[in-house]
Image (cartoon, rainbow, N blue to C red; front, side, top):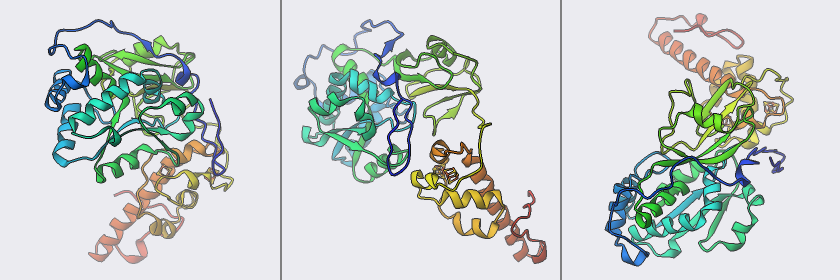
Length: 370
Ligand code: SF4
Ligand code: SF4
């Protein structure tokens, strides 16, 4: 675990020790049925063949779970001008993309070059994106990088707005895992049968990154890393933006599984009163006045909430994560947004004559359900 103070915020990454451990493999590393004639160098393969092999190799991009062939074809049709290997992993606990880049760098760069060739781009249009604080772990990457390394810092989650902006500017972001699988499909004739996954969380005794077979049940994967106690909450994806897992026996690894995280005490039973430090506002990627929204939601100050709900909350959880009082801020904000929505409905009913003005709820009053 590292703690880096940036603008008064302490983003505890909790990526150690997984990020610096060797990636463990739980699959047979055997060559598979011959997909294509043997290819030994990038000069021997045409742009069209790269697209076809991405399809034959059933390579998926872990960033969004879409087939790589489809993403490359769309980028080609739209005339994208750059490709970025995305090793950002900006959320706490996650390090699967960064570890792949750190430990399988040659395959990542090879896959990146293949994508560049498929899109007809020169090497100067290729780069790798990493999350700036993570370079503390991996100084060698910065020193020895052959393809330019772009460092990104800032507010959680960094990668969502970055990719949206990239699309607008004709920049294709691809996960490092997908690039490794493309390299293997082209040069080793292997289909994608695995995914790179971070296994971590506060009730995992031995966190690490693993290359897991597709279709492995989450429960089995978690047992490999030693559950210190029964988790009360399991999620896949990121610790902030991930989805809850209801049945880990019946939830399986897919090409877009980036992490399986197991936690205990997800409910913040030890929360303390808000101390007004403002850290929640410093990290909010939407630049929301989180502290004021939180207070207004707690005290049902509809007049305040009404003025502040124009920008939606992403429910990324960054505010809760940095809160020193361990407040679970997001559900409270959602209640506030819901109060405003119901109030708007009631105002509409008042205009249509169904509700009288004096019956509309005022500050501090409950807003009745519709
Ligand atoms: S959960 Fe909402 S309020 Fe909190 S940091 Fe994310 S976007 Fe901002
Ligand atoms: S909600 Fe938490 S982070 Fe935000 S001001 Fe209060 S104590 Fe600070």
